[in-house]
Length: 222
Ligand SMILES: NC(=O)c1ccc[n+]([C@@H]2O[C@H](COP(=O)([O-])OP(=O)(O)OC[C@H]3O[C@@H](n4cnc5c(N)ncnc54)[C@H](OP(=O)(O)O)[C@@H]3O)[C@@H](O)[C@H]2O)c1
Image (tube, rainbow, N blue to C red; front, side):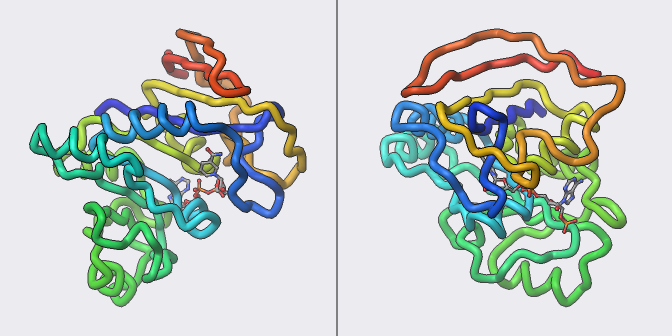
């Protein structure tokens, strides 16, 4: 599976404010780029922290992109994936609507009741891992369901776990021209961080987009 992480940060590396509310960091040209990246992916993944903070829909706004996918025999929208160990996802979350297939990745920590309720709300449930979701196992399970190109949109906890497990192939960071600050504000890569064996990147491209900069990296590994 090919995994691309794509996110937008402030100039000081924050994904959002200390209130964890969604902030508009990029502009129309970058939204179009992200739409294209989604359209070219089999699935788009977020952590439960992002679902609880932003209630994202993760579909394609641009009808031309949906038509293009349908014309090549794909579902109009890529599948959506939520990583959610204990099944905290609200049953009325927008990501559970019928606009696309949604996979909710749970761990053995989720109760059977919660598992059934999430399935009844329309998701395909995948159980991987004991306490937290095991991302290597979960990505294998998605691969078995036909996901070859996976786009990850955040947040910082999930991105850290993917880097820690050596599962990221490409990283695209849009750096917007604003400062969010805040020691409690989420950053691009949170979790416990790395003290050795840092993930190494190769800078492939730098491009001005809207009033920010798009940095494109290939991930070399730890
Ligand atoms: N600017 C951007 O491009 C962008 C994009 C996305 C999000 N955001 C922002 O990022 C913030 C949310 O980020 P976040 O870091 O709090 O949440 P997150 O990464 O979306 O989700 C983290 C949660 O996922 C669950 N999880 C399950 N298995 C995991 C594993 N193996 N590794 C890590 N987490 C696992 C954990 O909760 P359980 O243990 O309960 O399962 C964990 O708390 C929001 O403020 C949102 O607005 C910004």
